[in-house]
Length: 216
Image 1 (cartoon, rainbow, N blue to C red):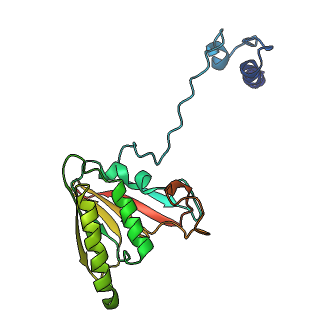
Image 2 (spheres, rainbow, N blue to C red; image 1 turned 90 degrees about the vertical axis):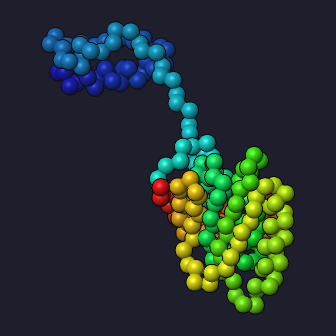
Image 3 (cartoon, one colour; image 1 turned 90 degrees about the horizontal axis):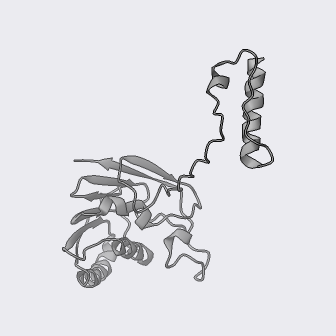
């Protein structure tokens, strides 16, 4: 009998939680078991709902973990992915062999927009690749970036390494973020009026993996 009483009690408890017509009662058999004896005589107060926490909140505590980004996923931004691991850093190294085309340079600019160098200068060391025919034009663009970044206390130090394959971000505070696709995580927009030019969270992503590791 006791297993049947327990099942009936659980159903009655749920009914009393969702409909005031069902008052709170405790059902007991002639030989009550531990479950029946421990059942509260009065209806417990409703449990407070815990606020939902965005697992990619820029305010989250940095920790070693891996994030898998699905094809066409939205809601992703450089701020959400990187900011918790860059806070307090004054020297950041970005290795990405493909910061060459104009949209890739825009990605670099978007990355720098999340850096905070308001109090002390911050040095960004960029290591990327470059075909011989691109080097002159690319150096000119990077020199222009240096001037623009300097106005916001960011010192850009760039170099070329055509043997570079891996993509990662590293800080002097001891974090390395391994990037499957580098900064190039967003799909090409369908047209120039597609939402997401200013707000990265509205863009569709490419499938990739981001790994956060402690190196110090």
